[in-house]
Image (cartoon, rainbow, N blue to C red; front, side):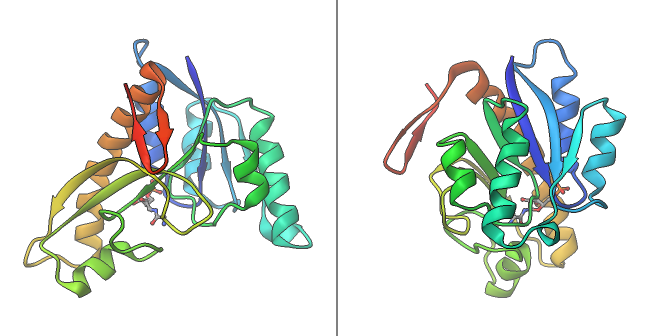
Length: 200
Ligand code: GAR
């Protein structure tokens, strides 16, 4: 089965969806470790409950971002992943990390890229007044939510939505899209040609 290392910063419901899916024998991927950039990430507890090893690599423990990034890459590499999944990981990974897992790092974003990059996508979508937003799974590159798109799904904005209600509705679609996309990547592989990602 395809080996996943999942990185989280927060609640970890996307991680939980992967853990739940991977507990079924037919799922083609398995979560071999979960890492975080902070000790209080709830996702770490989810991993522990599932019996999955965890690690924490805190930026504050390093002299600069480059050293942190290299240490994070080494911690992930120790679990020999086929695919690295950023699931609500709220820090940008750097060049050492990208070079270590080329074309094998995916991230989820709660908007339809290229709209609303950054950490406040549901709020930005509401403020802009779009009627449809959604979620995006993409291959991580050096930019902020700019990498080649693997999969997207739409979510309608309701007239009475606030940031929380909209984000929660996006997240329920996002979890299913992540589980499905990881399964297809694990089962069939993927190719990248410029910005075009194909799962055969
Ligand atoms: C998800 O909606 C994810 O797309 C978003 O944070 C949430 C994490 O939820 N990530 C970003 O906005 C990254 N820029 P979770 O911790 O419950 O999986």
